[in-house]
Image (cartoon, rainbow, N blue to C red; front, side, top):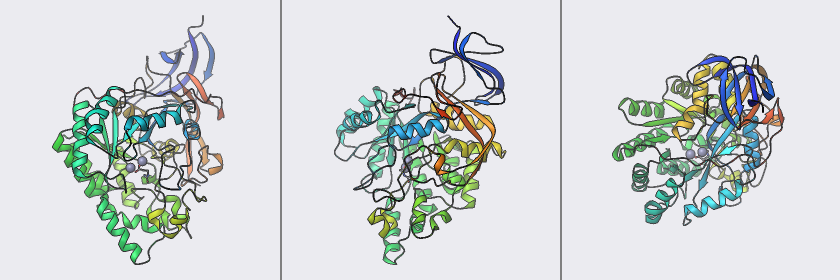
Length: 466
Ligand code: URP
Ligand code: ZN
Ligand code: ZN
């Protein structure tokens, strides 16, 4: 019997701390050897001149999530995970949204049914808590954490989702008791409602006014409040999709005070601005997401956050809607006001190439920082077992990158279900060319060779100490 199923030969391996040339030996889905001149495998992959990186972990994606009457998300688990694999990812963390009045168990049953047999890569759910009743807080959540669902998301805004500070404190208390990790969407709901009403009353209804309805102070204030609530309970939190300097500095100050606050940012805050929402007619709707892209200084601040370790997570916040579709951005109500344009943009396949190209290729971050931001830290933050690193014993979740390959991002090359990409035309240097999930190719030299249904659900233990 051969020593290995696969050897990846002669590539440059990067971890969150090192870069070195070695062979990777893979057996039964795991990395079993790192060394020179490994031999004895059915499949020997020549990786000379390539980078051998941990498969990306996209720890913030929305798939098949109900998004309001008549609105349909553009991706199901099949298309989203296929697109993710082509973008160099091996794990995604989608949301399981609890509808008001619904039990979280019932919500999970629904999402597992959607995912089962349809995933090309692995997945693990975060639980969105929209209805923190006594039984949800007292019984369901502790039982679900014990069953491997150890992260929640709570919202400070959105009709039907926003929790009061009292409710957020209640969820944070459960997280402290159970060792769960809580993500917080930090925007001030009342301020957004007030500004939205004022804008509509003065006839300012075009997509661009979405950005004006939720300016930086709306996010900065909520970030400060979220941190304060977590401080009261003494529990770690993750502030997701941070878009600007004010919110970034709130997180930095909290970290400097010794609070366990993790920051996440996304590609849209590095390469888009609110000017993108000004497109002709309704074109700006393609960029409507929350928080909105900001300005040049906000982009610089987000880069500083990544470079200085204020942000340790870089996710896509993939939340895809078709543009030219009555069930998407151009739904009839959406044409009448930005208020009704579904929030969210696609980005599951472009997240890694954008960060690699703008970050590593342009010298803003090191290759090890790239690996940490896109895989290793997500695995640590969310306790993903055996994921996020090229090391002996880990799952052989690997992306092979050609650091010199160039392209222009184009919708026609992508595999998601949306009919556009907000990143059309961006020049990229450095692309994933192959993706292996637990030792087996999903994409090989740009060609799909995987099997729908190979992706599995990952149960996750809680944090060790509260
Ligand atoms: O606009 C966005 N980001 N939509 C997705 C939902 C969320 O808040 O993450
Ligand atoms: Zn959010
Ligand atoms: Zn999101």
